[in-house]
Each structure stands twice: as structure tokens, then as C-alpha cells.
View (cartoon, helix red, strand yellow):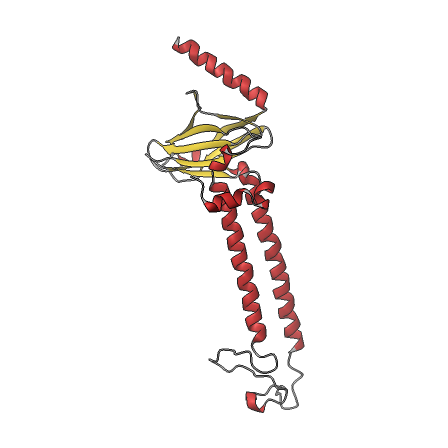
Length: 258
């Protein structure tokens, strides 16, 4: 069921640029990296600048520094300096305005990042979009069944394998479940993860943009053989090569059943 939020996200600019979950998470990481670096540089630079600007002068002959506690009303420079336990009001020349401005800018940045990240997560979680494209092929739906200590893949025609073969440049929609205990199916390079829970199905989608062999891993501690539940092959093939393999598996299945 399409919600107003998902419909808005589908037409958003970032949704057009970030076509796959891998793109989404890579872009999100880059945004946090750049902003985090920028904020760190500004904060450290400002701290060093003020530490140098307001450093104490050399002590006098008696070892005292040129620092005096002056009440705000007696301060000749017109600066209302906050006292212990006092909330800055922003009055006077400067006063707490810098503090309020810094808090406001920080809040805007943090809230903006939260909204941006959440909108991207909504885009990734929205599997309905996979069926709405007029120029794109419908996703290939594969059921992933986890058990101690392996994954089994069931294709739409009923073909069952222990290695996942998928075509390049086509959305893959996995329905993940478990036959025994809780597992977690994930392919690190393709940025896809989903919990495998008994008697429950969890959907996730991804799209491989390069051919090659990847690794399916269980990311949930599931028993004494958990460490061996990795290395399951995920083979990304050219579409024509995949179709040939899929057709041959259908033919073999029909021959066996016949």
C-alpha cells in the first residue's frame, strides 16, 4: 500500500540518483563523513583561536596572573558575563548570543541529518517501488530459508539451490525466513541484511551492478556452528547467462518430475 511519504520519496531527487541500497548507504556515509569532518575542523579551529586570544599574560613579580573576577555591572567593556548557575540571556554586548546561535546551528544540522537519513531508509524499505517503474524489469523474488547452519534459496519456479545466482542490473527481492532459530542473512558488498525469524518473513531488496562472486553471511549468533555459516556463494551473472542457467534448471526439474 502506497503512503504519501513513500510517494513523495519516489519522486525525490535523491531517489533518482541513489538507485540501489548500496548507493543509498554509500551516499549517506559520505554525507556524514564530510559534515563530521567539517564540523570537527570548525570546532577545533574555534577552540584553538579562543584559547590563544584569551590566554593569560605572563605572571607579575608575585606570581599572579592578569585575571580578575569582575561583576557584570562593574565590567567596563559592557560584556554581560554569565555567572555560575546562570542561564545566558543574550543581553549586553555579545553576551550569550554566540551560545544560542551555536546551539541553533547544531540543532538544525542534527535534525536535518536525521530527516535526510530517515527519508533514505524509507526509500530503501519501500519495496512497492520495484513494481512501479514503466521502463524497468520487475524484481526477481527469491525465498531465503535459513537453518543451522546454511542458507537455501527457492526461486519462483520452485528451483532450490544452496548457492544464490542472480542477474546483474535487476532488482532482487528476498523473502527471508528461518526453519529453526533466529538467523540474519546478509551480503556485505551489496549492502543488504534481513533477519531470519521462524514463522515470519522479512523482505529486503538489492541490485548488483557488477558481475562476480560475493559472500552470504549469517550475522546472528545461531549456535555452535555459527562461524561456519559464511562463505555461501552469491554469483552475479550477466542477464543472458542467468536466463540460460534458469531455463536449464527449469528443464531439469521438468525432466525429473516427468
